[in-house]
Image 1 (spheres, one colour):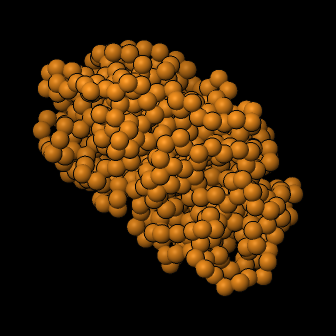
Image 2 (cartoon, one colour):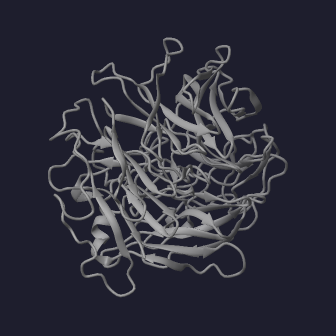
Image 3 (cartoon, rainbow, N blue to C red):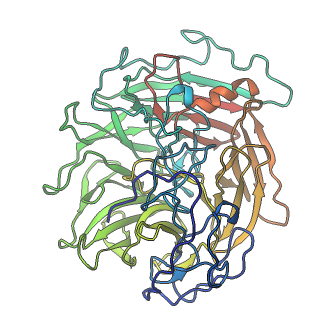
Amino acid sequence: MTQPPNHPPQGGFGAPQEQPPQGGGFGAPQTPPAPGGFGAPQSTPGAPGVPPMPPPPAQQPAAPPQQPQPGYGYPQQPGPYGTPGPYGYPPQQPGPYGAAPQPGFGHPQQPPYPGVPGAAPGGTPASRKKKTALITGAAVAALLVIGGAAYAVVSGDGGGKKKPVAQQSDDPKHSASGTPSPSSGGDDPENLNDGRKPGEDRVLWYKSAPDAPRSGAEAPGMWVTDKAVVKAAYKQVFAYGVGDGKPAWAPVSFPQKICAVTPQQSDDDKVVVAYMSGTSDKAECNQLQQIDLNTGQKGWNVKVDRQGAFDIAVEISLTISGKTVIAGRAGSAGTAYDVDSGKKLYDKGSDGGSCAPSGYAGGAGRLIQASSCAAFEPNEHDEIQELDPATGKVKWTQKVKKGWEVTKVYSLDPLVVYLTNSDKKAWNISTFGKDGKFRSQVKVDEKFAPHCGFLDRDLQGCQGVVTDADTLYLPTDSTSSANEIVAISLTTGKAEWRVKSPAAEPMYPMKTEGGKLVAYVQPSYDAGGQVVSIPTAGSSHKPTSLLQNPQGTAQIEETFFESVVGWSDGRFFISSGQLSGSDQAREKLIMAFGN
């Protein structure tokens, strides 16, 4: 099963779909209750099947009167496990995915269909507005979307213009090995705190980006330890002191451009970086290098070997779980290595010609594999499996109903999975227990806007979505004004509370700590961004400001392309996930804010 392309439709979500056939499968039809809170909740008699959600009524065009249905009065869609649900409306554009993409954070990010995590290409430096992607879960340290997938994976945006990614030509505009400048002095002597207003916090330090090809370059990942912030960019990995920005160790250089990183680090602060095998059309992303975040020392280096003719490592995803790092090639294979020694542990490939891995998500001591089975056959379907990270042995398998695809993993513990149905233009968010049994599904019809990587290879590539043991926190969509964060029970799937952004700009969750949700509010033309704290318990969920970034740096804060953000020990970090390679201006690689 192929994943939906990143071509969300323009405008609203269109009129309701025609009534689909009610399918059996993983439970009986669900009857959604009356509208309320974050949307019309569904009752789940015994099985998952979280189908699509309609957009808010105000965004729906006028439609002919229909026969009343349960809940909101619209036809139900069958869910990924066979259980029909109340949501699911087609976009206004013809076809399952619509037309051109929209920008990311802060712009109308129209997903392929309601609820689909949007990812849009970027723009030129002049058009970069509100391009902030968030690290969630364990913040930057565990770049996983929930507790982990927060992730340093980057999310897109960009006004529908061509995304400045590294293309076939790899010629740098200047030197490819240039290092970022210091926070002051040298070739970039800026005082970003000059003119700071009362109540505003400080720019602790910043670094300029290294030279990159004119076609752009990837700058994936951002890891935070007790002492350093570590950042990959083009052909190098840099490390800076968390408080002063001084180099923590000399940059680690690679012979070719970096093409993937582990979004999380191991328990002893090891990461794995993948880089290209060369510069030709036949070059693959198959060279793995381990790095110690505390010292910058290079560890083992291995080449990912192919498992058959269909295993092409043009793009790979990397993830760490425990002592295992796995390199996944979408739709073909996965290879696991010991994160300390680089020793090959096992291969995961075609299961007797029936199932092949389509993605991996790791963290919180768990390793999840999504597989596509019986492709192009009548019984084509996806499966979700939990693997023993050390051995690859399957712990449990959850079969997904035909037509539904495992698209993203929002959280590992608890396991929260995002699924899509391109034929029905529907989506589903389901939660599973430790044993793989269905627990609940989201029962709201709000238009959510977590931001997910533009590359389908990354099952963990979402930001701006956070979970704790019992609650899922999702941001609603916004064109550029205030939005809301909604807290959804993982037991019932219903909205428990919602809170509006304290400014006239969108707000996105980053992590939970100390019984509170930490969120990032984007900057505006007359104010810098801010970090706020929201109580998760009790009756009051009023945001309290933790940091107010300077207004004088708001424009710079907005121009970080496909940015990755993180919050750690009272400091806010924002970095670029993509370098433009533009000669127009010296672009920033990373900035740190604090008291």
